[in-house]
Image (cartoon, rainbow, N blue to C red; front, top):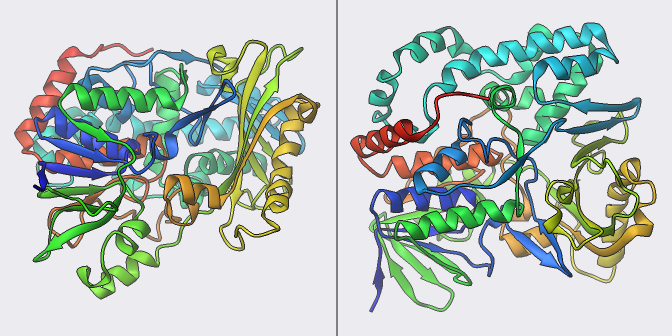
Length: 511
């Protein structure tokens, strides 16, 4: 007999778990099908020889701070879950060719650090951030928990008339890129490059390719809520979402691979697994990328030809090289958790291997590594082209990991002598374990030249969530995509009731 559910979610990435958890909270019978044996998608965690690694995101904010406006934080609240997170400041250190700069949470401290390099640039940085904070202020007054993709959002907006009045002068900035605000406020070339780096870390694109509201949210949260890291790593976030899903009656099945989405008469009616079993539901939500959803889970004839061609032609951000290390921590006092290394100022930030991100989360949470050890995660952009598993694969992995080792030597000079566990991940690794098209981390959609597609599809009953839908790439954006999707599938009154309950229970002061 075919199983029947109210909704099926394909994939247990953060967007899929948020959508599933909220639908379960609304009283729907929800099943999440995850092909991997570990939930979390690109945010899953894994362990080797006592070292616990993050597979993907390592920068978070507001997870342990209930005054945060982080959409993920709001979802955890209404699911009845919380995270133990460690706040820290400075956020990290940027190791640039001309020297190392600490990056602080609050603007005044950030400016003070930049003033040591360029006093004029520090003043211009302040003008840039203040312009973004003016956009963040009204947006932050409207709970992201109430976001909807339809006119059902109107009652929510009308509950916040003051925010609407404040937002009117900012409407032009909502559709602008951060680069346009940068051009209007910053002339110092050093600070312009710094802001490009900030945007690149957020979206994989420079300031002119990143939408202003996304950058405004980051700087606004830094100013008003803690920047923190969850104890247990990104795996703890996933575990909290899974607990919330199950608390409200939802089900997660691991090792359950969806072969195709079943469509009848232009409507999604369920999924078929690789085992041949079929599971029925009037709602199917794909947390797979748009390329995997439209190119693999659906037959070509089930989509309008022009739509399919246009969607599959969407450019993708490069994949990554990842270096996961377990190292000896002897004589590494005062080590910071995050570092960014730019090797060559004259090369684009987006050049593979030029910008390297480093996370050492055991600095904040010693349980992630055995006593006297540290866990290290370093990563940099890497294109898909040319990667194949042949006799040259092992050597190519090591060659392409070399920029990461050189970056790590800026932080820990003798890093190579300390390594006890070494794992090198390539675009092929990401495609294999995350089931992501070419191992990508999302669409390369530049602000002003296009918009991330919304979660609706041409097939009735089929929706999408994740980093290839609105609002875009990054943990808060992916969580917001799940909110958009779930709220669009229930009545506006159900959403209003949920927001009311959240508003009543949350603190009303900010840190």
